[in-house]
Image (cartoon, rainbow, N blue to C red; front, side, top):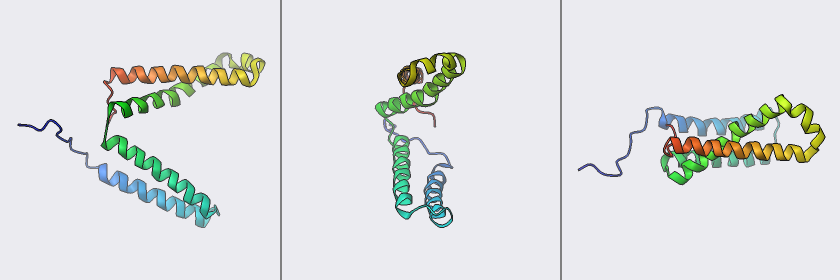
Length: 134
């Protein structure tokens, strides 16, 4: 009998990808300290943040779940789709309306466009049955 939790085989590029990402992050931190005169404390803090993001990215790929996949796709909807809608607004009628509304118009435009983007990301996620692409 086949095991219900049979693991899918990872592609050949899987392990070298993560090794390359860790090496690249480490080397870029060293380059910033040596050549761009960035303080060591800042490089350590940013490297810690980068490694935390790498760990999160690895986690969502190794232990997929519906909740994590849904959150990732909603963030995908907010980021490029929401900010894209916001840019479309600015380049179409935003030049005329946004200066009249000031900072509150900017905040309202960004909130509405990111909310619409989140709903679009969730809709895409439902159509893909809550699966992230490999």
